Structures are given as C-alpha cells and as structure tokens.
Amino acid sequence: MEPRARVGKNRGQQNFSDQELQLFLFAHGDVANSLEPTKKVLDEIITDFITELCFEAHRSASLAGRQKIKLDDVRFACRKNPLYLGKIQEMLDKKTEIDNTRKLIDSNDDKITKSAVRAMEEPLNDLDDDVDMDMGSKGKSVGKGAR
Image (cartoon, rainbow, N blue to C red; front, side, top):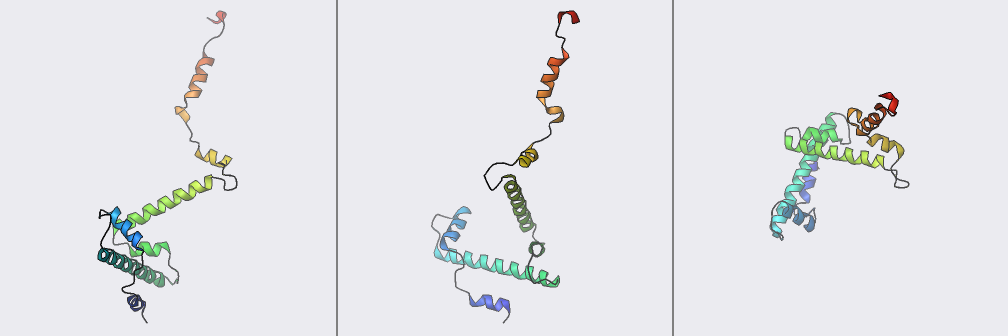
C-alpha cells in the first residue's frame, strides 16, 4: 500500500490533544474556548502539513540514496517558502546557543568551569578604564625634588 493511502486510513482520528490545539488557537487570537469543529479542522490541517513535509523530505533523502531523513532534506522540502526556511534557521540558531551555554556549565557540580570563564571574557583593549587609572598615578612625579 502506498504511504499516502496509509495516512488516509487514520482520517477522523485526532492526532493532537484538545489542550494543545486550544492553546495554539488561543495564542494566535482565538477565544479562550474554541469550538470542537475548529479544533478538528486545525488538527487535520497540521497533520496533513506534517505528513506532506515528511513525504517531501523522504523523497529528497531517497534521491540522495539515504533511508534516513536529515535536516537538510527538510530544508530542501521547504526551499520554496522563505518563511519556513527562516523559522528553521531561527530554531537551529537557538539550539546552537543553548548547546553552547550548556557546555559552559559543568554538569558535575553546577559551577562554571575556568575555561568557560575565559571564553566569556571579552578583550577590552582601549576600552579598559582600570589600566588608564593605574597609568595616571604612575606618570606623576612623587617627590618635591622632581619638579
């Protein structure tokens, strides 16, 4: 049986919970208690979108000779919609930022490691005020005879 035909067998079954759909609708401007038909239609739309996106990504992976779908396959499937590509890139940037932050924190004792502190320090160069203040006191003469 073709995969798309298998998806058709599950028509009418809800894939997302009512609470997830309700919160999604409310976040996008719907009333606090949406109608049941609205939730069912949204569930069907989201399920169809995810299914079609996965089929397109699978097609890209199979043309590349792979059985597993990679993130690049999903990007390729979204190549015609710059909004989707932008959202994917935004999520990847956020994931990279979170991963880098996790590396900074030592998981054994929840303290910041020395290498992490060095990585967080920024070179000040000409912006360092402390060096200017120290140099200012050293540059002046100290004794009466030096005038």
